[in-house]
Length: 171
Image (cartoon, rainbow, N blue to C red):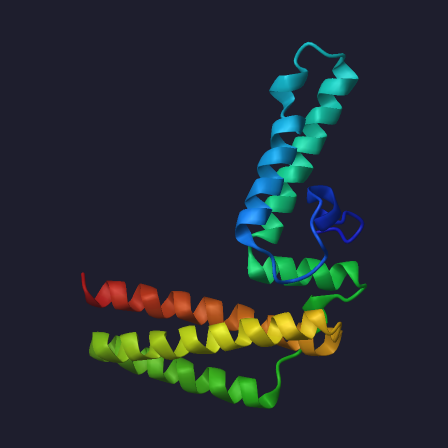
């Protein structure tokens, strides 16, 4: 993802983490409608290429901004921060180990209730993490935001693993 392209500006939205989904959807539809390549079929080849390029950029902007993790990484990139350089805290690493052990144990036992409890705990953690991420981005605290983004990504992946394990138990 390139920090050279400001996807917020491309869609005419304020540069902040908290976005109203309806506002994002409306901005996307409006820009996509005007830039759609079919509207430029009768134009010169250069105009057609420009329309295709604009439509591609608008689609990419929408894809990035509708996903909280990608939106946060984009905001950080716009502020000159490479979120991929963040390193997890020892506390987060220990918590990850505990959650993974709980997941493995519940999966091995085929314990759907334990998987559902873990899933509920992870959803609550994910919600709290997203709130911390939003606060850090709004306060323009890149180090804190990078750490929150790292945690957010981990929580989403682990929650996906819990849901998948629970589905396997029910098969």
